[in-house]
Image (cartoon, rainbow, N blue to C red; front, side):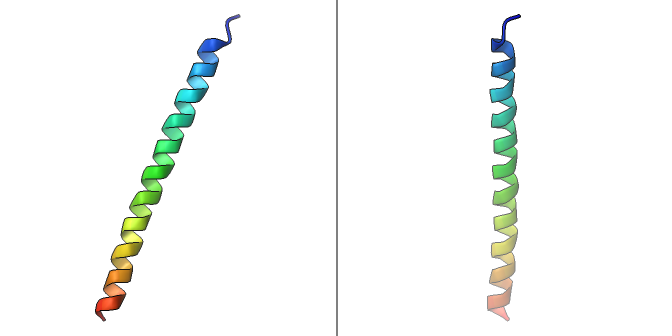
Amino acid sequence: MNPWPFVAAAYVLTAIAGAAIAFASWRSMVVAERAAEELRRR
């Protein structure tokens, strides 16, 4: 059985998961920055 399709699939899944985590972290950072800006305005 050829292992390369599984290796490629693992890399694709890792790339997708990494992009999802990076996007979630970025969104969380944006929300936190907005909250910090609101605290400064008070």
